Image 1: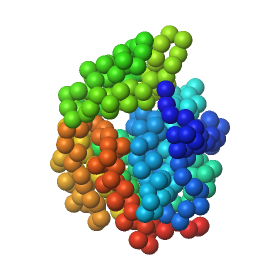
Image 2: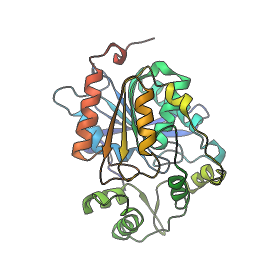
Image 3: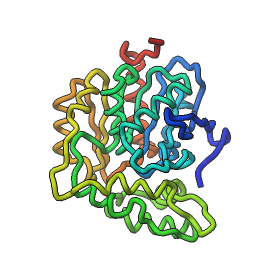
Image 4: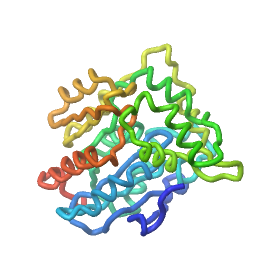
Length: 306
């Protein structure tokens, strides 16, 4: 139920991961533009479609269009499902991103990581810091709140099938309205269109239900481990962190501590939004575009072979 093809402003590319799994990504814009490319990484049960409006905004910017690659991680969207659920692992997914970069000829990029995509960005910074020209972390940080994780654990892999997009929209709105009071009916419908796929029995969630196994081993009664060393691996790159004002995953205190620890960290509070803010909304997309545009003037953001 996603946009498809060049009419929507992108081409679909398929890439083999290091273990042979088939991965899908949306490729917006031209390969050889001089501006720094952007790689978008979605949340746990989300797809690259979430970044469509932002990707179009960046790839058609009259002042400096740039290439954008939005990934469907393994087990999501049009990427192949993994027969071994244990391989739905952030480190393996970060390696998948490197496979996409190699196949698409991207040496260095600005990473826009939403939720789990932000965790993948931090792991990439530890694995291969030279590929990161800058980062946008969307409602994620090195301290993850247990309350939000419990909420996500309660629905991933457990949503019922629905008959049509109207039912799907109503379901998502019922689950998320308290976190997103500012969302319009059009935003809820767009979210529904990007959350379900057509199946013989109706509309099903557009991801492998086995993704729930990534959460099943987490003991919410015990303190969750923090990821400050991975966050600090991003210290070489300019950073923008966006927190939804109603987020139950990234606290205001963690956001402040991220800004204190990182030498070049900007922060935005998206009021009326929860986990994860809509990066395609005009105001937020404009703020992200402005941040990325500034990086082209920095030596650290130049794209060059190594």
